[in-house]
Amino acid sequence: MIKKILLSSLLPLIFLNTLNAADTHIGLTYKETELAKQSAQQNTPDKFIKLNVESIVPVQTLENKDEVYIALTSYSSFSEPKHEEIPKFPSYLDSNALASLKKISIWSGVVPAGEYINFKIAFVDRDNPPLNNDDLIGIVSLKIENKDGKIQYTYKDQVSGNVKTSSSMPVIPFRLKTRNSFYQTKIGVEVKEIVDQKE
Image (cartoon, rainbow, N blue to C red):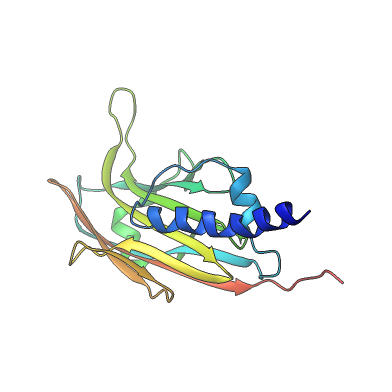
């Protein structure tokens, strides 16, 4: 019994060391593991997270009118990767009307204590594949982690080029620049507490 208790007390420490080693690797694929599940802090409140595109501003479009959509891929430490398009095919966002668009919610869900999710947020010009393939406008990487009940964010600062980790999440501006296009976007996160209903 004593050996079992000692082993269970060490598991969170082992898992936290693994997280620390991976903090600077944004966008990696993480598969579900029993170790990750066991390390979740049961007495720490889970968080409801909402990921938003606050704005998209075209400075230079690929064509006279780009047909923009967002391809979002999420890599969770607790579950398999997921992918979706916003809006779904064949709909799109008209680049000529983007400046007047308000906040777009692209992901929401509960992030339990101990879980981290790496997001790849790609902005794409929709064309007519396979004859005319879609064109990438730009891509943003963001990691969100529930660390002992506190949400932590990791992203690459595009001015300094450094990877930043913060416990506060302002609305972050990103530049989406290719040889033939230039867009500016802002990504924001909303965090809400979840009330434990257990007696």
